[in-house]
Length: 202
Image 1 (cartoon, rainbow, N blue to C red):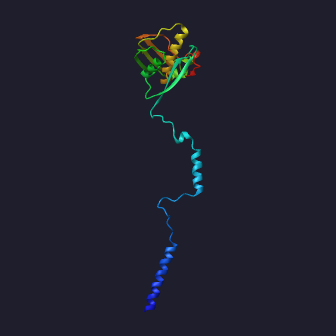
Image 2: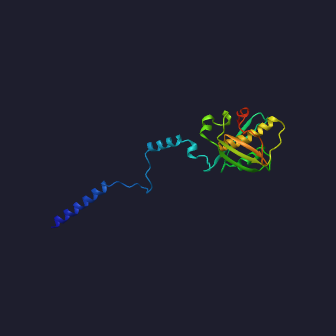
Image 3: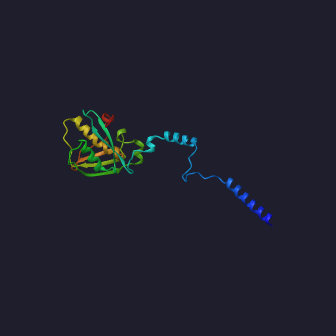
């Protein structure tokens, strides 16, 4: 009886020792195990290949629109095309920029501005707009309170091209009908004159 009990005790101790030796050893620290060296190297290479702009992109506020405005260059021989960002693009925003760049005088107001789609199957078949020599399909009607005086015809053309180009570019117009204080400025639609079409970036 004593021998059988002793054998059982010895057998139990052997099983306990065997289970302990087979179980995986825990690391000395409770923190995460260090990744293998090749994994670390691969991660470093991947990080180095990421463009800086993608990693920390330049912040551009969502919902901003591009505003394009034309102004005369220093010697009034051609136009400068100036781009900026704005929360919304409307007639007042364009007017404010034209005043800021000295195209229009401070205090100039928009009395009215509307866009009329005059498209028709015949007009679309004949032309892509007044610059192509045919009928326009999308016309802006702008009435300003005043226009600055111009010294000569060239200065006048620069002024008209700046106004027409700014509104045409931002609203995808084929032409602009301009009035000053309720009176039609010209019987012809304003468009971008080909003489000033080769603009520079401001």
